[in-house]
Image (cartoon, rainbow, N blue to C red; front, side, top):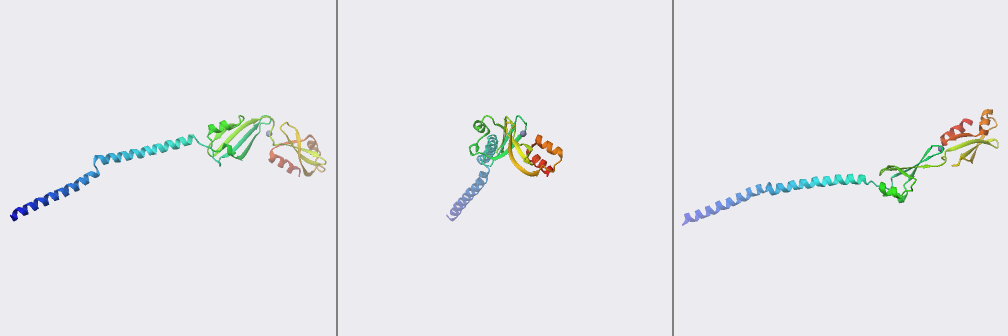
Length: 197
Ligand SMILES: [Zn+2]
């Protein structure tokens, strides 16, 4: 009788051990089971798709660049009669913020041409009749040199007097001042005035 009991207990122990070992090995295999491998491949594919989607998004957003409140706003006007181009840097008007190039084109007045468009900088250009505001004429007035500007119709308008007396200037300079000395731009104006001082 005791031998039987020992035999049964032994069989039960062997079976239990077998089950335990089987369970352990099963777990080991489960880690790299085809199902899990498939999941890993899927995860990798997903990651790749997400990356591709991101790249596409970046490319699209680059195409649809929009103006921002800090976009540099540069206006270039070329005057037909003198050929000078005057460049003005301004703050972007609120009504032109957050627009794509196409949207901006629709909102702008017809005379403006979009020369450059990016998030950082917009350059607009146009042509205008007449001459620019950078034309000056020096003349003698009441014994002193006076500065005149030329308006867009090429007419002289008094701007201001200088403290330079024509009294001691060489005769040729006095003669030139009577004819009017034309200069272009503030730099040239200041240099010419300094020459007489
Ligand atoms: Zn000009």
